[in-house]
Amino acid sequence: MTGHSDSPPDDGIRSAQTSAAPSFRVAALSSRKPTRFDLCPDRAARAAMAAALGLISLPAFRLKGEIVPQGARDFTLQARLEAEAVQPCSVTLAPVPVTLREEVLRRYVADWQEPEGDEVEMPEDDSAEPLPEVIDLGTVAEEALALALPLYPRAPGAELGEAVFAPPGAEPIREADLKPFASLAALKDKLGGGGTEP
Image (tube, rainbow, N blue to C red; front, side):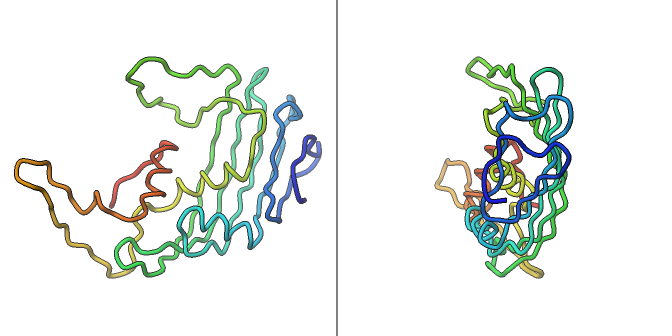
């Protein structure tokens, strides 16, 4: 499979082993039974994902699951993410291999209403989002991988002593505030999965 599809097969799992991740037009999804998929990006696609997330490499990646109709107009994407990634150590930049096994859940709500007011509280269910016209598995895969990756990977034996910097009368700035990997941390925060350093 090499591109988009408006009408996935009724009886099979949609597989992708090329650099073009499949996408599904919501209007073409079955309203009665699940639409299954099995995304296994090729080497070029994995290299692009690795570069986008600041990884050294992404030797293996798979996202297998289904898009299930919920009620009259909503859909739920539920999948299993399996990946082998190599991150740079947050202290020494040495390669740090990591094996990931994560469940992925997205709830697409047709009658989505954006929170109102100046102060918006984080919702209890952070898996819900507006129903798009097209569900792009490439975007889902990259965001799910970003959330699953350790934010501060450490190579064996790597230690970081904490130093505190502050002018008189100012709030101290600790080394945790000056960490690298700001792009990954910002993406995790945007997606609601921000973490703290162990």
